[in-house]
Length: 150
Image (tube, rainbow, N blue to C red; front, side, top):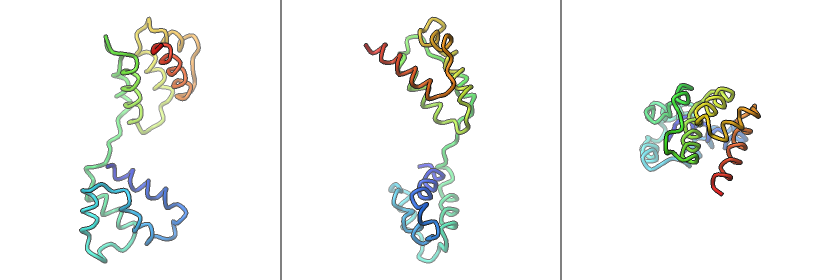
């Protein structure tokens, strides 16, 4: 579990109740896994005085559970391997792309294109008709996936 993600999820769910910090503390454990729930249940009554303190204590206890974002360089090292299916490569690419926190869509699109073999039809298509967004890239990929699956 990523603790930042968990706290963000709670904040989002409770956005309409942001003034009711006691309610936020009560809802906090609603999404916890078994190990974290044991920790939460083990907190002494009255040991936490605010939602802010709860998130701080939670973060300190489970700091090793933070997801470490990948740098953009992770995408730079990706290439479609000999014998790798198009679908496997696409899945690997999107998994890595989603682990990068910042918005580098234009770079990600270029990296995807150049990581395909030069003779690949999708690469040729992306060269002939450039795209401007990751959404457009996903649409174009889907077109080529359907062609490959047929």
